[in-house]
Image (tube, rainbow, N blue to C red; front, side):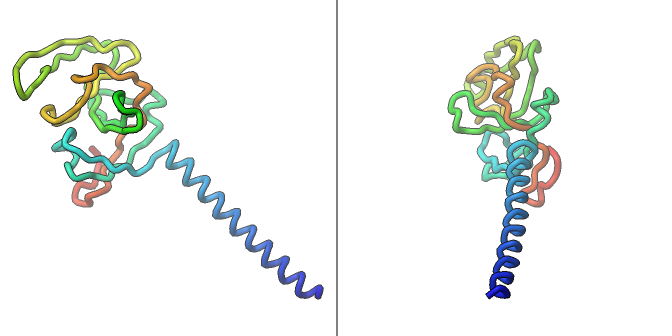
Length: 163
């Protein structure tokens, strides 16, 4: 009986040790995916030709925007100001205090407008001005809506590399 009990104790200890390793791995994966970087599927016409219409997988990092290291030219993930459940991918065009001139409706007229980006906000636009819902439609967005910075494209493989 004692031999049988000792065998089960060893098996239980081994099981607990392995479960602890799996739990630590899952915690590390969660922290990495939530606070450091994660793969993100982005699709739609607004970032053509930089990103594909049918979708690209990009690595997005979540540290730069918290440190204030986002600037003009960076492609960022933003919580949509119109639908908070949706993430959008756009390029930062201007930072607070900068002057932006843009075409109001590029497909219908050449009428332009000029605005100054207010403090704590950024001006974002899609690379495809004819098919992008961006700051030209909803104005400057608060810096706090930036969720991450696109670091590189990983899929499709022929487009692998930084943006």
